[in-house]
Every structure is written in structure tokens, then in C-alpha cells.
Image 1 (tube, one colour):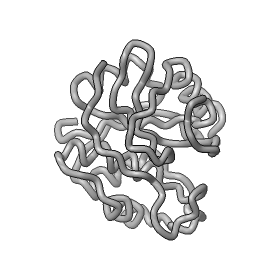
Image 2: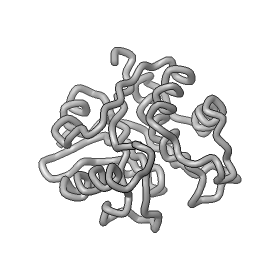
Image 3: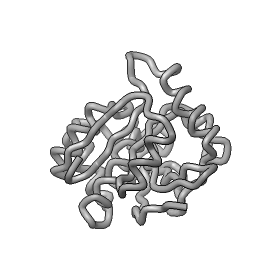
Length: 180
């Protein structure tokens, strides 16, 4: 098994409606970027990302797009990223194997062992793998332990996002690294 020592931060910030704050992308970016920078993630990092993107915290700001996460990675953390649609599980494993956690866009309803009710477009930080699972820090799960999402669940969740999200927003990955 390969597991990167990425520190967890949840997406729910004080004063935000738990099911509508749209902070899963900023939280996942914060976890991955702080790992790349060798420091601990903070709630203020998420707030900085939201401020840089003009997102609102009252649930009316909507979700975060890939282009916004790339922009925030550069502006807030000084990191370059690479976004690509339709990467497979082998590519996730390859990136993690060289020390780069991945931000994964997916449809959470296909993750059968998640511990929350939300079922829609979502971002997680993929931080490890073994033969049968991708290990993810899920900012909606409220658990600092990685979730073992089966290969079948991850593939279905990534594919379903591409089929269910309008306006051409597809699943993909962001590699956050100083040497991206």
C-alpha cells in the first residue's frame, strides 16, 4: 500500500450551511497544496481561496470549477497545476506513487461507503492506493482517516460526474506541485 502523509481539513466552515457551502474543491486543493508546500492546512486557506474566486459562503456561490481551482492554486499557494479530463485509476496511482496527491472530481452518490447523505458533484483528495482501493481524504466525511473507496466505486463515481454535470464540467485531476 502507498499512502501519502497528507493532513485532512474538512470543507465545513463556521457559518456555512453544511450541505451547500461548495467548499469541497477549496478544501481538497488546500490539503494537496499544503502537502506540496510542507505545511499544515488551515481554514484560512479555504477562505483565501474563496476570496480569490469571489465565492460566497452562504450556499449561493455554487461549486468550484477546474479553472478556478487552477487559478486559486497559483494565486493563493504559488503552485502550478495540471488539469486533465478522464484520467484513469492507473494515472491516479502513478501520480501518488511519485508523491503528488490528486484532487479528484466525482459524483459522490457512487461512493457506497461514504458516511454522509450528499449525492452529487464533489471533490476529494486522493492520497493513497493499494490493489483494490483508492484512499481519499474526503472533506465532506468529517473524518481525518482516509476512506478506502473501491476501484469500481471510484471509476463509477468519476464516470458518472462526466455524464451528470451540465455545461461541460467533467471530472479530472489537479496535480499540485512546485514542479508540476
